[in-house]
Image (cartoon, rainbow, N blue to C red; front, top):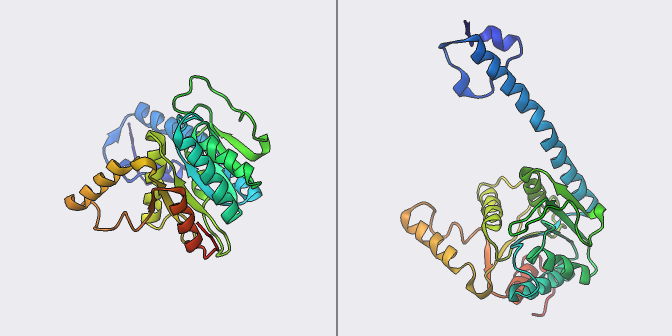
Length: 266
C-alpha cells in the first residue's frame, strides 16, 4: 500500500490538480495507473504545442489581419457566397492586410477568392475534414502550400484563428468577421467573444469584431442573447458592446473605416 504524500512529490511525481491531494491510502496498482496517465499526458502535449508554434510561425511570416469565421456548406450557388466574396475583396482593399480563414470550402473559400482578387495575401489553418464533407484532405485545392497549415488538433487551429487578429501595435489593422455558419462557426464566435469579454485575447489594442447578419441570419440568436439579459445571465448591453452587428457589406466597411479612421465612400 502507498500513500500520496510529500515523499512522492520529491521523487518527481508532481500532482498538478488539487483534487489529487488526497489522504486515503491507495493501492500500488492505482498509483501505477496514475503515473502512466501523467506520463502519457505529457507526451501528448508535445505535438499540440509544436502545431501551435507552427501556427504562430505562419502568422509571423504572412502578417496578422482579418480572421473570417463561416460556413463550409454555403457554396457558390448560395447568395451569401457572393456577398462574402465581395466582402473579402473590399475589406482586403480597405485594410491592406492578410486574410485568414479556416482554409475550407463554402464561405471561407469565398473570402479567400475575394482577397486574392484584391491582390492581398491569404493564409489559413485547415482541418482535415470540414462539416458536410465526406472525404479528408490535407491539401488546399489552389492555395500555395506555404500559405496554410493543415492542423491535426482543433486547439492549435483555434490558437491560429485568434492570434491572426491580435494587434500588437496601433498601426496593425485587424478584425474578426463572423459570417453565417453552423455549429463550428458558433463555437469559434463565442470562444473569441468570451476572450474579448474577459480581456484574455492577448491583444494590446482593441480588435473589431463584426457579425454579418445577412438576411437576418443571426436574428434569433441575437433575440436569445437579449433574453439572457432578462434572465440575468449577461448584463444589459454587455454582449452588444463586444461586437458590431452588420446587415450589409456596406455597414461593415463603414464601421471598419470609422474604427481605423480610413477614407471610405460607401
